[in-house]
Amino acid sequence: MTKHIYIYSPSSAIRDKAAFRRGVARLKALGYEVEVDEAALAVHQRFAGDDATRLASISRAAASGADIALIGRGGYGLTRILDAVPYKALAKAIQRGTEFVGLSDFTALQNALFVKTGAVTWAGPAVGEDFGAEGGSDDIMEACFDDLVCGQGEGTGWRMPVRDAQLKVKPVHDATLWGGNLCVLTSLLGTPYFPHVEKGVLFIEDTNEHPYRIERMLDQLRMAGVLAKQRAIVFGQFTGMRKVPGYDRGFGFDTVIDRLRASLKVPVLAGLPFGHVPTKVLLPVGAKVEVAAEGRDVFMVWGHRHTHAHDDTHDHHAHDHAH
Image (cartoon, rainbow, N blue to C red; front, side):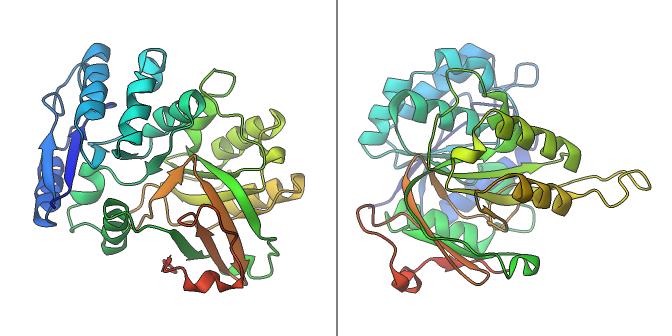
């Protein structure tokens, strides 16, 4: 049976319509039945339609009965409407089998929905920037997406940076995976939409942020007591960082990670293939995961919810995304 994908735009207006069209065409070429929301290309100020329009599109995505509800793009717009999102309808749609997928601004909806209902959504691609990428969409991303569509995704694996070769990581069992875009997540702190996860695995990514801004957000989460409560902090990809020549004087992303490690007892892992990058895995936000590491190789497993990751982690057909 052909899998049904519903595309909607809950955040910024889609500026790159060519990329959006390429993305829709690519999904069709992969054999999916694609339905595009009536307001997917709407424009109001910087948004894909005014707040009411975007709320209506979220409701239509929930009512679509699709296998996957996929965002057109991220940007900005969901934090504005968190007070009005139909959380129960979304949770019911997920119970009926619709998987909600997105990243970036979508982090706000994912974490709010998890707080309100406990429902699991997926950090993953967007139509335009991923399926509609100019050079064609990434093979690993497509394989992970297909795993989700077919109900086969059980975990992922990656290789940490060379500088972390000696890092010792205790296995993590039965921990809630949560997080997403660092900037969006930090903006939820102190609101009713910020998850209070203890003994979880927090993953973060961001784009176009200077290292000092990344450090400031991490310090906010650290001083708010969030980071020390986790079993592990996992850094995804931080792209488009612009250091100031002659001013930062060696202060960079590695400095930020090293200082965080020095100030926390919680293991801080790096290199997760997720973020504003072509090669991205899909991650179940709100699901229970196991994490194990061997040398630089990290394995994160979620497919077998009620088992513990033993030494046979290699048997889980986690894609190895070593760069």
